[in-house]
Image (cartoon, rainbow, N blue to C red):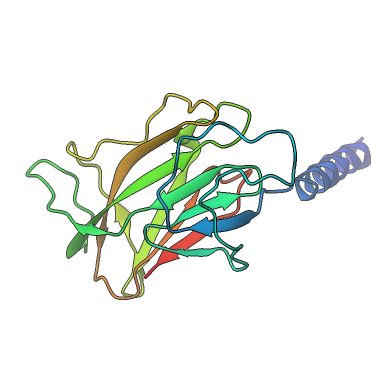
Length: 185
């Protein structure tokens, strides 16, 4: 009985690993300086550009603040240039944070299906340390209403940092289906 249990556990573990390695993420494809647009979704032709303002592809998954990064399936993200932020009296302030920055996150759904922006993942690092997201009443949170195909949503995120040197923002519209994009100056 004990060998049967071990065999069953090993089989389940192997199936899980094989199943997970078969999952692909949508790789970033193109970057643009232009703001995200609310154009209609792309046609079924793979040769047509999803967004007319897209530049040449970027190979390394990076973009400058303010650029729109478009994935192969038409999903696009943009992180604005950071701006100083002053937390309010009742806002949560991360321990050790000495400076605060706020960013606007724009997600444009260029796919054919509704997208849940609550799946987006944004992190920040600067001055050799990971930043911590602020939960401030004046900032709000990611929207929970799905984005229809061809539409965009913009919201703000704020972070407490130990400094601003080498500021990097990592964003993925969804950590399972999309590769991360690194934003910096």
